[in-house]
Image (cartoon, rainbow over all chains, first blue to last red; front, side, top):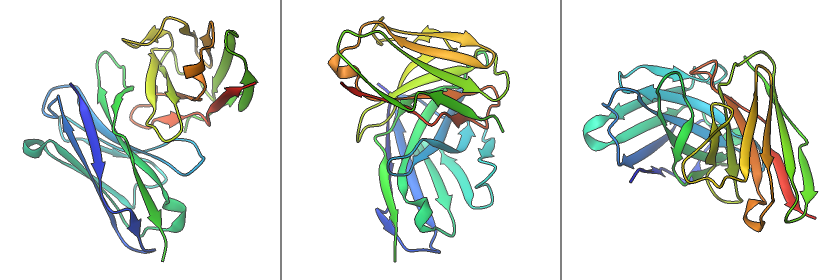
Length: 122
Length: 108
């Protein structure tokens, strides 16, 4: 059974750095084709892809946010960590981690965590 | 970057209705498109991938079609549990994924 769970602070101050952890089970991020991504959703708005890390430790970032994002993995702990620097109130959103099992060019998110709401406010 | 649009942005429907949601890509994406359903306070749920392949466990009243730039999600007979927001997502430009703005389906 595949599960993912996000954890991190519910409230951060402007200019601070946000660190979120995705803890997953039911798969290994060392398996060929396996990827974990972060996606966020501001209240009442659409989904926005942020970052992806794959089984080979390749890392990819949203073009608009890449200077502020860092994604990493700890395969032994089944965790993926996202850091976002210089937080602003516009970064207030629910942050999701999601799995991709890449096969034959198919890169869709088949499992999602329940999300964690992060509010940026002083 | 590939932009995704959806229409309509929202509409009201009744249980039993046949509903169709349209998604358009700003450039051709072959069939590299997924559809998700999201209910309030919940994570998105994968419904369809590769434009028309039903994810395991998803009811057969959901179907998808299209390729290139124009895609549709159809619910053949709307059920009460289908009232939600639906998003399309392209993965042609992997790993630079983009989602559509969403279509909210509510009760008439």
